View 1 (cartoon, rainbow, N blue to C red):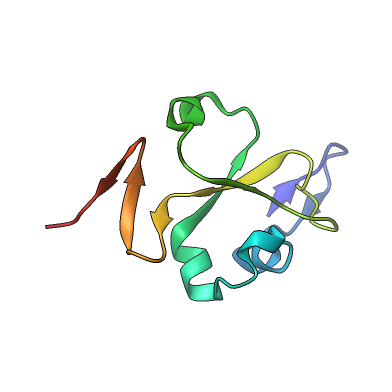
View 2: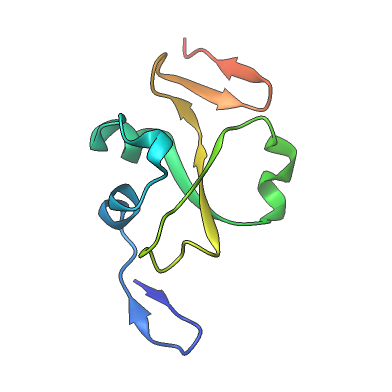
Length: 91
């Protein structure tokens, strides 16, 4: 649960994020979406150095569409973790 600007609780789950995902992600199934994409606040400083990671918008009516975005942290095609310009291959 999250708080809106007026202090009211509202749900923001992976299901909400999946239903309001960027149209570019329509071909991604829910399992890969939950595993490969992370919702972050726009302008969050701990992710600015990771500018090469793909970012996607949340669509309305998602309550956080204006304040958050989706960050691809794992490439669903290769199943490898994406770090900066490199791809991490698990051993």
